[in-house]
Amino acid sequence: MKKDRTVFNGRNNRRSFLKNGMVAAGAMTAGVGLVSGSAAFADVDDRAPITKGDIAILTFLSALEQVEADLWIQYAELGGATNQGLSPIDLVQNGKKIVTGLAPAYITGLLQLDGDMPQYIADNTDDEISHHAFLNNYLQSKGAKTADLSQFAILPPSRVTGVPQHGRLTNLKQLTVDTSWWTRYRSATQNPDLGGTFENAVPDLAKGQHPAIPVSDDDLVLDSMGNISNHLQAIANTAGFHFAFVEQGGSSLYPTLAQKVTNLEVLRVLLSIGGSEIMHFQTWQDKAGNATNITDGDLTFPNLNSGIDPNNGASGSEVADLFQTNLIMPEPTFLLRQELGPVSIIRPTGEPAGGAIGAVQSFVDDGLFIDSATNKNSGIVKVLFRLAEEADEARRRL
Ligand SMILES: [Fe+2]
Ligand SMILES: [Fe+2]
Image 1: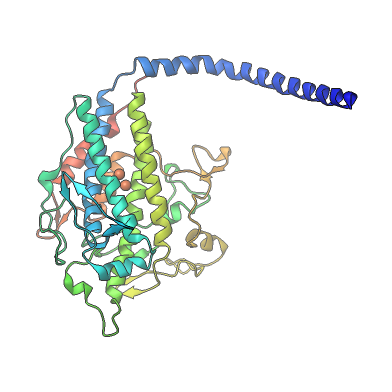
Image 2: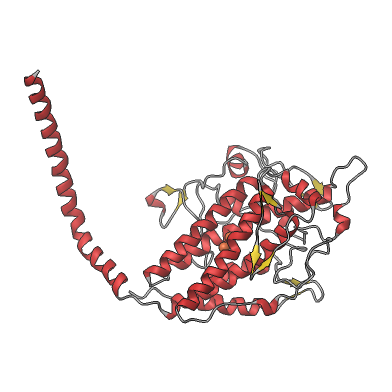
Protein backbone atom coordinates (compact mmCIF):
# COMPACT_ATOMS: atom_id res chain seq x y z
CA MET A 1 0.00 0.00 0.00
CA LYS A 2 2.71 2.35 1.07
CA LYS A 3 4.71 1.58 -2.03
CA ASP A 4 1.69 2.05 -4.19
CA ARG A 5 1.05 5.41 -2.69
CA THR A 6 4.64 6.42 -3.24
CA VAL A 7 4.41 5.33 -6.83
CA PHE A 8 1.18 7.17 -7.19
CA ASN A 9 2.58 10.27 -5.53
CA GLY A 10 5.70 9.97 -7.61
CA ARG A 11 3.72 9.79 -10.79
CA ASN A 12 1.56 12.59 -9.61
CA ASN A 13 4.63 14.65 -8.81
CA ARG A 14 6.09 13.94 -12.18
CA ARG A 15 2.86 14.91 -13.86
CA SER A 16 2.58 18.06 -11.85
CA PHE A 17 6.23 18.84 -12.63
CA LEU A 18 5.49 18.40 -16.31
CA LYS A 19 2.37 20.46 -15.98
CA ASN A 20 4.09 23.18 -13.96
CA GLY A 21 7.03 23.07 -16.30
CA MET A 22 4.70 23.66 -19.17
CA VAL A 23 2.92 26.37 -17.29
CA ALA A 24 6.23 28.00 -16.50
CA ALA A 25 7.31 27.81 -20.12
CA GLY A 26 3.92 29.12 -21.17
CA ALA A 27 4.13 31.92 -18.66
CA MET A 28 7.51 32.88 -19.99
CA THR A 29 6.22 32.97 -23.52
CA ALA A 30 3.09 34.79 -22.53
CA GLY A 31 5.18 37.02 -20.27
CA VAL A 32 6.69 38.76 -23.24
CA GLY A 33 3.32 40.09 -24.17
CA LEU A 34 2.05 40.27 -20.62
CA VAL A 35 4.53 42.85 -19.37
CA SER A 36 3.79 45.37 -22.02
CA GLY A 37 0.11 44.35 -21.90
CA SER A 38 -0.28 45.08 -18.20
CA ALA A 39 1.64 48.29 -18.59
CA ALA A 40 -0.78 49.31 -21.29
CA PHE A 41 -3.72 48.51 -19.02
CA ALA A 42 -2.22 50.61 -16.25
CA ASP A 43 -2.06 53.47 -18.70
CA VAL A 44 -5.71 53.03 -19.60
CA ASP A 45 -6.73 53.00 -15.96
CA ASP A 46 -4.55 55.83 -14.83
CA ARG A 47 -4.18 58.22 -17.65
CA ALA A 48 -6.57 57.70 -20.55
CA PRO A 49 -9.12 60.44 -20.05
CA ILE A 50 -12.54 60.60 -21.58
CA THR A 51 -11.88 62.05 -25.00
CA LYS A 52 -14.00 64.25 -27.22
CA GLY A 53 -14.52 61.15 -29.32
CA ASP A 54 -15.80 59.20 -26.30
CA ILE A 55 -18.33 61.95 -25.60
CA ALA A 56 -19.39 62.02 -29.26
CA ILE A 57 -20.00 58.26 -29.14
CA LEU A 58 -21.97 58.44 -25.89
CA THR A 59 -24.03 61.38 -27.17
CA PHE A 60 -24.90 59.61 -30.40
CA LEU A 61 -25.81 56.40 -28.57
CA SER A 62 -28.01 58.32 -26.14
CA ALA A 63 -29.81 59.97 -29.07
CA LEU A 64 -30.32 56.66 -30.83
CA GLU A 65 -31.53 55.02 -27.62
CA GLN A 66 -34.11 57.79 -27.34
CA VAL A 67 -35.31 56.84 -30.81
CA GLU A 68 -35.39 53.17 -29.81
CA ALA A 69 -37.29 53.99 -26.62
CA ASP A 70 -39.81 56.00 -28.64
CA LEU A 71 -40.61 53.16 -31.01
CA TRP A 72 -40.69 50.53 -28.28
CA ILE A 73 -43.07 52.68 -26.21
CA GLN A 74 -45.50 52.66 -29.15
CA TYR A 75 -45.27 48.87 -29.36
CA ALA A 76 -45.77 48.57 -25.60
CA GLU A 77 -48.78 50.90 -25.58
CA LEU A 78 -50.56 48.62 -28.02
CA GLY A 79 -49.04 45.18 -27.49
CA GLY A 80 -47.19 45.28 -24.15
CA ALA A 81 -48.23 43.29 -21.09
CA THR A 82 -50.41 45.01 -18.51
CA ASN A 83 -49.13 42.99 -15.59
CA GLN A 84 -46.16 40.91 -14.68
CA GLY A 85 -47.67 37.94 -12.92
CA LEU A 86 -49.05 39.39 -9.70
CA SER A 87 -47.60 42.87 -10.13
CA PRO A 88 -48.60 45.61 -12.57
CA ILE A 89 -46.21 46.62 -15.37
CA ASP A 90 -44.61 49.86 -14.27
CA LEU A 91 -43.20 51.39 -17.43
CA VAL A 92 -42.30 54.99 -16.76
CA GLN A 93 -40.61 57.64 -18.87
CA ASN A 94 -39.63 61.00 -17.41
CA GLY A 95 -41.82 60.28 -14.39
CA LYS A 96 -44.87 59.57 -16.56
CA LYS A 97 -46.51 56.16 -16.50
CA ILE A 98 -46.84 54.48 -19.89
CA VAL A 99 -50.16 52.80 -20.53
CA THR A 100 -49.78 49.30 -22.07
CA GLY A 101 -51.81 46.57 -23.77
CA LEU A 102 -54.41 48.85 -25.40
CA ALA A 103 -55.05 46.55 -28.39
CA PRO A 104 -56.01 43.02 -27.22
CA ALA A 105 -56.68 41.85 -30.80
CA TYR A 106 -53.15 42.95 -31.82
CA ILE A 107 -51.85 41.03 -28.81
CA THR A 108 -53.71 37.95 -30.10
CA GLY A 109 -51.69 38.30 -33.30
CA LEU A 110 -48.43 38.78 -31.40
CA LEU A 111 -49.16 35.70 -29.29
CA GLN A 112 -48.88 33.63 -32.48
CA LEU A 113 -45.16 34.40 -32.32
CA ASP A 114 -44.78 33.48 -28.65
CA GLY A 115 -46.97 33.27 -25.56
CA ASP A 116 -44.63 35.71 -23.78
CA MET A 117 -44.56 38.41 -26.47
CA PRO A 118 -46.42 41.08 -24.42
CA GLN A 119 -44.01 40.64 -21.49
CA TYR A 120 -40.96 40.74 -23.75
CA ILE A 121 -42.25 43.90 -25.48
CA ALA A 122 -42.77 45.65 -22.13
CA ASP A 123 -39.32 44.57 -20.96
CA ASN A 124 -37.53 45.62 -24.14
CA THR A 125 -39.23 49.01 -23.79
CA ASP A 126 -38.07 49.29 -20.18
CA ASP A 127 -34.51 48.47 -21.29
CA GLU A 128 -34.40 51.15 -24.01
CA ILE A 129 -35.77 53.81 -21.66
CA SER A 130 -33.04 52.85 -19.20
CA HIS A 131 -30.32 52.94 -21.89
CA HIS A 132 -31.21 56.49 -22.89
CA ALA A 133 -31.61 57.69 -19.28
CA PHE A 134 -28.35 56.08 -18.14
CA LEU A 135 -26.32 57.45 -21.04
CA ASN A 136 -27.66 60.94 -20.36
CA ASN A 137 -26.94 60.59 -16.63
CA TYR A 138 -23.43 59.43 -17.49
CA LEU A 139 -22.84 62.32 -19.89
CA GLN A 140 -24.07 64.74 -17.27
CA SER A 141 -21.82 63.18 -14.60
CA LYS A 142 -18.86 63.96 -16.87
CA GLY A 143 -19.95 67.56 -17.37
CA ALA A 144 -21.07 66.93 -20.96
CA LYS A 145 -24.31 67.95 -22.66
CA THR A 146 -27.07 65.35 -22.62
CA ALA A 147 -28.87 64.24 -25.79
CA ASP A 148 -32.53 65.15 -26.19
CA LEU A 149 -34.39 64.94 -29.49
CA SER A 150 -37.87 65.56 -28.09
CA GLN A 151 -38.30 68.66 -30.27
CA PHE A 152 -38.71 66.20 -33.16
CA ALA A 153 -41.58 64.33 -31.51
CA ILE A 154 -44.06 65.49 -34.15
CA LEU A 155 -45.17 62.27 -35.87
CA PRO A 156 -48.74 61.16 -35.10
CA PRO A 157 -49.10 57.84 -33.26
CA SER A 158 -51.72 55.11 -33.78
CA ARG A 159 -55.30 56.34 -33.46
CA VAL A 160 -56.37 53.20 -31.56
CA THR A 161 -58.54 54.21 -28.60
CA GLY A 162 -56.49 55.08 -25.53
CA VAL A 163 -53.18 55.78 -27.26
CA PRO A 164 -51.92 59.17 -26.02
CA GLN A 165 -52.18 61.46 -29.04
CA HIS A 166 -48.95 63.39 -28.56
CA GLY A 167 -46.34 63.51 -31.30
CA ARG A 168 -43.68 60.80 -31.57
CA LEU A 169 -40.13 60.58 -32.91
CA THR A 170 -40.91 57.49 -34.99
CA ASN A 171 -43.60 56.29 -37.37
CA LEU A 172 -44.45 52.58 -37.18
CA LYS A 173 -47.29 52.79 -39.69
CA GLN A 174 -45.42 52.60 -43.00
CA LEU A 175 -42.26 50.56 -42.58
CA THR A 176 -40.01 48.95 -45.16
CA VAL A 177 -38.35 46.22 -43.15
CA ASP A 178 -34.97 44.81 -44.16
CA THR A 179 -35.00 41.15 -43.09
CA SER A 180 -31.57 40.25 -44.47
CA TRP A 181 -30.25 39.86 -40.91
CA TRP A 182 -31.99 36.49 -41.08
CA THR A 183 -29.64 35.03 -43.71
CA ARG A 184 -26.68 37.10 -42.53
CA TYR A 185 -26.67 35.22 -39.22
CA ARG A 186 -27.24 31.86 -40.99
CA SER A 187 -24.57 32.20 -43.66
CA ALA A 188 -21.45 30.05 -43.18
CA THR A 189 -19.37 31.94 -45.74
CA GLN A 190 -20.45 35.60 -45.87
CA ASN A 191 -19.76 38.53 -43.56
CA PRO A 192 -20.93 42.09 -44.34
CA ASP A 193 -17.52 43.35 -43.16
CA LEU A 194 -15.93 41.28 -45.95
CA GLY A 195 -18.37 42.49 -48.59
CA GLY A 196 -20.98 39.75 -48.12
CA THR A 197 -24.52 40.29 -49.35
CA PHE A 198 -27.62 38.67 -47.96
CA GLU A 199 -31.13 37.75 -49.06
CA ASN A 200 -34.29 38.75 -47.26
CA ALA A 201 -36.31 36.24 -45.24
CA VAL A 202 -39.52 38.15 -46.08
CA PRO A 203 -38.85 39.76 -49.47
CA ASP A 204 -42.20 41.60 -49.51
CA LEU A 205 -41.38 43.46 -46.28
CA ALA A 206 -38.26 44.92 -47.92
CA LYS A 207 -40.39 46.73 -50.51
CA GLY A 208 -43.48 48.90 -50.18
CA GLN A 209 -44.68 50.27 -46.86
CA HIS A 210 -46.28 48.16 -44.15
CA PRO A 211 -47.79 48.94 -40.76
CA ALA A 212 -46.23 47.24 -37.73
CA ILE A 213 -48.93 48.56 -35.37
CA PRO A 214 -52.71 48.78 -35.79
CA VAL A 215 -53.28 52.21 -37.29
CA SER A 216 -56.81 52.64 -35.94
CA ASP A 217 -59.61 50.68 -34.24
CA ASP A 218 -60.69 49.50 -37.73
CA ASP A 219 -57.65 47.22 -37.84
CA LEU A 220 -58.80 45.51 -34.64
CA VAL A 221 -62.27 44.40 -35.79
CA LEU A 222 -62.77 40.62 -35.37
CA ASP A 223 -64.58 38.44 -37.93
CA SER A 224 -67.92 36.75 -37.23
CA MET A 225 -66.09 33.77 -35.69
CA GLY A 226 -64.25 36.08 -33.27
CA ASN A 227 -60.91 35.66 -35.08
CA ILE A 228 -58.51 38.43 -35.96
CA SER A 229 -58.17 39.38 -39.62
CA ASN A 230 -55.31 38.27 -41.85
CA HIS A 231 -54.41 41.95 -42.07
CA LEU A 232 -53.97 42.23 -38.30
CA GLN A 233 -51.93 39.01 -38.20
CA ALA A 234 -49.73 40.46 -40.95
CA ILE A 235 -49.28 43.62 -38.85
CA ALA A 236 -48.23 41.50 -35.85
CA ASN A 237 -45.85 39.45 -38.02
CA THR A 238 -44.36 42.67 -39.42
CA ALA A 239 -43.76 43.85 -35.85
CA GLY A 240 -42.08 40.52 -35.05
CA PHE A 241 -39.57 40.95 -37.87
CA HIS A 242 -39.16 44.65 -37.12
CA PHE A 243 -38.21 43.95 -33.49
CA ALA A 244 -35.27 41.81 -34.64
CA PHE A 245 -34.31 44.34 -37.33
CA VAL A 246 -34.02 47.12 -34.74
CA GLU A 247 -32.11 45.06 -32.21
CA GLN A 248 -29.62 43.48 -34.60
CA GLY A 249 -28.66 47.07 -35.46
CA GLY A 250 -27.78 47.78 -31.83
CA SER A 251 -25.99 44.43 -31.57
CA SER A 252 -23.53 45.55 -34.25
CA LEU A 253 -23.41 49.25 -33.39
CA TYR A 254 -22.05 48.91 -29.85
CA PRO A 255 -19.09 46.61 -30.67
CA THR A 256 -18.27 48.73 -33.74
CA LEU A 257 -18.17 51.96 -31.72
CA ALA A 258 -16.42 50.26 -28.78
CA GLN A 259 -13.35 49.95 -31.00
CA LYS A 260 -13.13 53.76 -31.15
CA VAL A 261 -13.42 54.39 -27.42
CA THR A 262 -10.38 55.51 -25.42
CA ASN A 263 -11.45 55.58 -21.77
CA LEU A 264 -11.81 52.20 -20.08
CA GLU A 265 -14.97 53.10 -18.18
CA VAL A 266 -16.64 54.32 -21.36
CA LEU A 267 -15.65 51.03 -22.99
CA ARG A 268 -17.29 49.20 -20.09
CA VAL A 269 -20.50 51.20 -20.60
CA LEU A 270 -20.57 50.28 -24.30
CA LEU A 271 -19.85 46.60 -23.72
CA SER A 272 -22.43 46.39 -20.95
CA ILE A 273 -25.27 48.01 -22.90
CA GLY A 274 -24.21 46.36 -26.17
CA GLY A 275 -24.59 42.93 -24.61
CA SER A 276 -28.18 43.67 -23.68
CA GLU A 277 -28.92 44.65 -27.31
CA ILE A 278 -27.62 41.24 -28.36
CA MET A 279 -29.94 39.57 -25.84
CA HIS A 280 -32.83 41.52 -27.36
CA PHE A 281 -31.90 40.49 -30.89
CA GLN A 282 -31.50 36.84 -29.99
CA THR A 283 -34.93 36.78 -28.39
CA TRP A 284 -36.63 38.45 -31.33
CA GLN A 285 -34.99 36.48 -34.07
CA ASP A 286 -36.26 33.32 -32.38
CA LYS A 287 -39.81 34.70 -32.15
CA ALA A 288 -39.91 36.01 -35.75
CA GLY A 289 -39.45 32.42 -36.93
CA ASN A 290 -42.90 31.60 -35.54
CA ALA A 291 -44.64 34.05 -37.90
CA THR A 292 -47.39 32.17 -39.66
CA ASN A 293 -47.28 31.62 -43.41
CA ILE A 294 -50.00 34.09 -44.50
CA THR A 295 -50.71 36.60 -47.25
CA ASP A 296 -52.30 40.01 -46.80
CA GLY A 297 -52.57 41.92 -50.09
CA ASP A 298 -49.07 42.23 -51.52
CA LEU A 299 -47.40 40.97 -48.34
CA THR A 300 -46.64 37.26 -47.95
CA PHE A 301 -44.86 35.73 -44.99
CA PRO A 302 -43.23 32.68 -46.53
CA ASN A 303 -42.88 29.25 -44.95
CA LEU A 304 -39.19 29.49 -44.08
CA ASN A 305 -38.97 25.75 -43.36
CA SER A 306 -40.06 24.70 -46.86
CA GLY A 307 -36.50 24.48 -48.16
CA ILE A 308 -37.41 26.98 -50.88
CA ASP A 309 -35.72 30.36 -51.20
CA PRO A 310 -38.58 32.90 -50.98
CA ASN A 311 -36.59 35.30 -53.17
CA ASN A 312 -36.03 33.12 -56.25
CA GLY A 313 -37.58 29.69 -55.70
CA ALA A 314 -34.19 27.92 -55.47
CA SER A 315 -33.93 24.81 -53.29
CA GLY A 316 -31.29 22.47 -51.87
CA SER A 317 -29.53 21.98 -48.56
CA GLU A 318 -27.72 25.32 -48.73
CA VAL A 319 -31.04 27.12 -49.18
CA ALA A 320 -32.58 25.14 -46.32
CA ASP A 321 -29.71 26.18 -44.02
CA LEU A 322 -30.18 29.85 -44.89
CA PHE A 323 -33.85 29.98 -43.96
CA GLN A 324 -34.67 27.21 -41.45
CA THR A 325 -36.34 28.87 -38.47
CA ASN A 326 -34.65 27.07 -35.57
CA LEU A 327 -31.11 27.86 -36.72
CA ILE A 328 -30.98 30.86 -34.40
CA MET A 329 -27.42 30.57 -33.08
CA PRO A 330 -24.93 32.70 -35.03
CA GLU A 331 -23.58 30.33 -37.71
CA PRO A 332 -19.76 30.40 -37.78
CA THR A 333 -18.56 32.55 -40.67
CA PHE A 334 -15.35 34.34 -41.59
CA LEU A 335 -14.01 37.19 -39.46
CA LEU A 336 -11.04 39.35 -40.48
CA ARG A 337 -9.51 36.80 -42.93
CA GLN A 338 -10.67 33.52 -44.42
CA GLU A 339 -7.47 31.64 -43.46
CA LEU A 340 -8.40 32.03 -39.78
CA GLY A 341 -11.39 29.75 -40.32
CA PRO A 342 -15.06 30.29 -39.52
CA VAL A 343 -16.11 31.57 -36.11
CA SER A 344 -19.48 32.29 -34.48
CA ILE A 345 -19.73 36.07 -34.14
CA ILE A 346 -21.80 39.24 -34.14
CA ARG A 347 -21.70 40.69 -37.67
CA PRO A 348 -20.94 43.34 -38.83
CA THR A 349 -18.55 44.88 -36.30
CA GLY A 350 -16.83 47.29 -38.67
CA GLU A 351 -17.63 50.32 -40.76
CA PRO A 352 -19.43 51.18 -42.87
CA ALA A 353 -21.94 48.39 -42.26
CA GLY A 354 -21.89 48.51 -38.45
CA GLY A 355 -21.02 52.16 -37.77
CA ALA A 356 -23.13 55.04 -36.53
CA ILE A 357 -23.92 56.46 -39.97
CA GLY A 358 -24.85 52.98 -41.17
CA ALA A 359 -27.20 52.60 -38.20
CA VAL A 360 -28.96 55.91 -38.88
CA GLN A 361 -29.19 55.13 -42.61
CA SER A 362 -30.82 51.77 -41.86
CA PHE A 363 -33.41 53.47 -39.65
CA VAL A 364 -34.08 56.06 -42.37
CA ASP A 365 -34.44 53.31 -45.01
CA ASP A 366 -36.80 51.55 -42.62
CA GLY A 367 -39.15 54.54 -42.89
CA LEU A 368 -39.06 55.24 -39.16
CA PHE A 369 -38.96 59.02 -39.57
CA ILE A 370 -41.43 59.52 -42.42
CA ASP A 371 -43.89 62.31 -41.73
CA SER A 372 -47.05 60.99 -43.38
CA ALA A 373 -48.35 64.56 -43.82
CA THR A 374 -45.50 65.45 -46.18
CA ASN A 375 -44.15 61.97 -47.05
CA LYS A 376 -40.72 63.33 -46.15
CA ASN A 377 -38.43 62.57 -43.23
CA SER A 378 -38.73 64.74 -40.15
CA GLY A 379 -35.90 67.06 -39.08
CA ILE A 380 -34.53 64.42 -36.71
CA VAL A 381 -32.67 62.73 -39.59
CA LYS A 382 -30.32 65.67 -40.15
CA VAL A 383 -29.45 65.81 -36.45
CA LEU A 384 -28.96 62.05 -36.18
CA PHE A 385 -26.62 62.03 -39.18
CA ARG A 386 -24.58 64.86 -37.68
CA LEU A 387 -24.25 63.06 -34.34
CA ALA A 388 -23.45 59.81 -36.18
CA GLU A 389 -20.72 61.47 -38.21
CA GLU A 390 -19.09 62.78 -35.03
CA ALA A 391 -19.30 59.32 -33.43
CA ASP A 392 -17.82 57.57 -36.47
CA GLU A 393 -15.00 60.12 -36.57
CA ALA A 394 -13.90 59.21 -33.04
CA ARG A 395 -10.57 57.38 -32.81
CA ARG A 396 -9.04 55.37 -30.01
CA ARG A 397 -6.31 57.55 -28.48
CA LEU A 398 -3.78 55.39 -26.69
FE1 LIG B 1 -30.89 50.09 -26.40
FE1 LIG C 1 -32.31 47.68 -28.07
